[in-house]
Each structure stands twice: as C-alpha cells, then as structure tokens.
Length: 549
Image 1 (cartoon, rainbow, N blue to C red):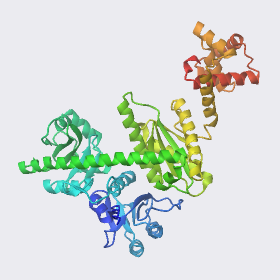
Image 2 (image 1 turned 90 degrees about the vertical axis):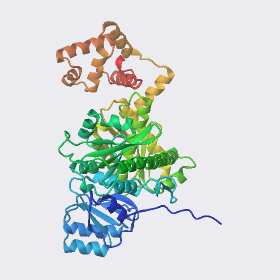
Image 3 (image 1 turned 30 degrees about the horizontal axis):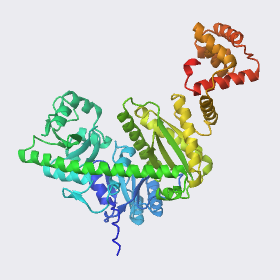
Image 4 (image 1 turned 45 degrees about the vertical axis):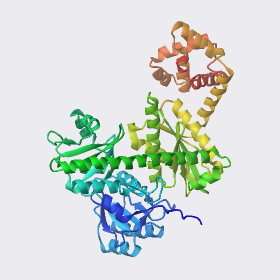
C-alpha cells in the first residue's frame, strides 16, 4: 500500500495578518474565516487578463476610488483570488463593504510609508514558508521547521519584547508581533526590511558588531548618542553555527535583560541557528532544482517538455532574458555570490510582473523565462519595459545588462530565444555598458560582427590593406590615424561631428583625414573602400583589441 504524500502546507490569511498586521497591513473587511489558504502574490494590471494563481493575494497598485475598489473586488473573486490589498486609508463606504461581503474577498489596506515592493517581498516570504525542503510536519526545537516568523514570535514571548531576526548584512529575515510597542527606528527597519545604513554605520563605529560577532553573550546598546528615532535600548545576540555567524536576534527592550531572560535569549539563538541552516539548505536545493529545470528547458532536448511542464510553462508563449554582470568583483567567491544575488533580485522582480516566470543562474548567466500572454505583437516592447524597469529600480546596486531573445510561441522555440538572448547580451557586455538592455533583433548586426570576429580569430587573421598600413604608421609615429578614420566613419563623413568625437579642431581633423588617405592608400570617396575599412575596424574591436584601433 502506498503511503500518501503529505500535502504542501499553505499560509493562511490569519497567518499573514498575525505577521504583518502590526506594521504593514490594516484589515478592512476580512470576514470571519481567516483560515483561508493563500496561494500567490499578483500585481493588478487592468490591461492583463492572465489567470491568477489559485487563492492569490492581489496588490491593487493605484486603485483608490471606492467604485474602483468595489469593481476590483468582484474581478478578483471571478479570477480565483482570495484577498485584495489597496493603499490605506481605504474609504469604507457602503459600496466597498457590500462588495467585500458579497465577493468573499478579504480587503486589506497597505500602511502609509510602506512600498508595494516591500509588501510583495514580505508576502512571498510568508507564502513560501512551506515550499522549502521536506514538506512533512517536521519541527526543530518545537517549532515548525524553517518558520522564522513563528520563531520570532516565540522569542518575543520569552523576552516580553518585540524582536527581529536578521542576517549578516542586517537584512530582516523575520519579525515578531508587537512592533508597534517599539520606536520609529524599528518601524523604519521593518518597512524597509533592512536596518537603515546610518544606524549600521554608527553601530559599526561603536564596535557593536565586533562585540556581537566575537562574544557569545548578548550585547546591550544604549540609544544615547544615536539618531532621535532610536529611543528604546536594544539587546542583540549572534546566531551561530559552529564558528560561522549566520545572523543575529535583536530585541527592543525597556531595560537590560534579567539573568533568566538573557539565558532564554542565548538558548533561543541556538534554535534560530537550526532553522536558518534548514532554510539555507532548502534554498540551495530549490535553486539547484530550478537551475536544472531551466537549463533543460532552454537546451531543447528530449527532456525539455517535462522540464517546461514542471515549470508551469507548457503551451505558453514566452521570451528568454539573459542577464550578465558589467562589473565583476575580483574575488571568485564574491563573484559567485554577486551573480546569485542579482539572479535572486531578477527572480523577485519577474515574479511580481508575471508570477509564472522561471529564473535560474546557469553558469555565468541568469536566465529568465517570462510568459507573454495576450497580444504577441507588443511582446518585444513589453519585455524591454520589464528588463529596463528592473535595472532602473536596482540602480547602481546591480551593474548588469540584459539581452532579450525573440518570442517563443511554445517550448520548442525556447532554445532559439535563449540563443538570441545570449547574442544580445554579448553585444552589451562587449560595448562596455553604453546600453544595458537590447533585443536580439536590435543587436543582430553587432552580433554578426562579433561572430565574424570569432571566425577571424580562429583562423588567425590579421589586419590587411589600408588598416594594416595605418596601424603600422600609428605604432611607429604615435599617431591617431586609425582613430581618426573610425570617428569619420562613425559620423557618416560629418567633419564637425567627427572632429568633436576625436577632440580636435575641424581643421586639424581635415589634415589627419588627408594624411590617413595618403598613408593607408584608401579612397574615402569609394563605397567599397569605406565598407572594407568599417568591417576591419569592427573586427578589431570584436577581437578585443580596441587599443590597436
């Protein structure tokens, strides 16, 4: 007899309100049944008719008027959603309340000052609690394995103080209830899901982190001398796994902890360490599995249909994005970590835009397979907008570029879309960041030139004819004739534009132009000579020898 496979645990509406209700979410009309399960996070787009995940939480960005809210409540219900979040304050008109009651959709308000991105990240953390590792009802230290939010509440009960659980970079992994009892600094930390940089700088300057990560005992932080928003003292303890520091627990307290509560905090850190290790191990397994599925789907072999089906993308038109780093850390370990970090950031962004997207780091490149439902005619513009928005939001934190492949109408076209995205990405990386997003269509000619440069390099070709003579002359006389020719060709023969690009006076530029024609033996009025020169100059650049040109 087969043993039934345990069903995947689901996060309930009550669980979300318990974790986020004090800081982010205000219940407006939730009904009596808060045990209803939630199945995903979707950003409302009035122009997108794509299906929601079952029992989705819908983020009604920009929806404010009572009539709009009421209409959207019924739309959410009709498409299988369970809850709607709109910006607070929410007008509790009779129309809105009646719509919430008749639709059965929970209506929540997003607190002023909180961003939609923050809320989406928090919700996904909660909804993913049962996705990692073994889904059986396993416990660690008496708490559901990997449930850091429940653990934070348990620690808060032991200490009688609101707490946060943070990683080594002071990012908030989970927080307890009762955060309204803390100060403005804690509220800012929860809303941003990150301790503000001005606080971490001061804490580092005062040696708090050094003591925290050196000693096993908790560290007491007096608020005197810090920002005015930091009113309550803090007690922190490091979370360790052997010699490795995984993170820390921070409690906002009225006074120093008693001996009994200090012991409770230290003991709690050991349990938190087990849960953090469990989460990290599960996340690593999940990443490897997703990377295998994405890689297999993009490869297009016999295993591709099954991989595409497991990713939930079977039969859907999709576009492949390929993202690479423009600036890479020198240290190999930091490079690997940075690639994974930007891949995770892209995954979060794409899941907010299109929940069924699949993202994985495969080798040096982060690939995203993005469903493109609806009108296929505008998918190119939509994909550029998605990629550009991600890079704009991440700003300088992510020095990356994204190549976009052509539309794949079904799984059989994914490999071609991946190849196009790879070619487009290579053009961006070769051009050194002058552009950060480009489609395979727009990069076609430059990609062909790079491939021609590959062929030329494989055969050992060298510059010939006029370009060879100009290179030899420049090397011998420290001249700039090749650069002059490149500027002139790039400017379509416009002397003013070309001289400005070369940073010389137009008269000087004309003299150099005449000189290069003499030295190179090139007829600048001949279309064939001009084309041959342009091809050779492009090949030199593609071969990675711009200093020669």
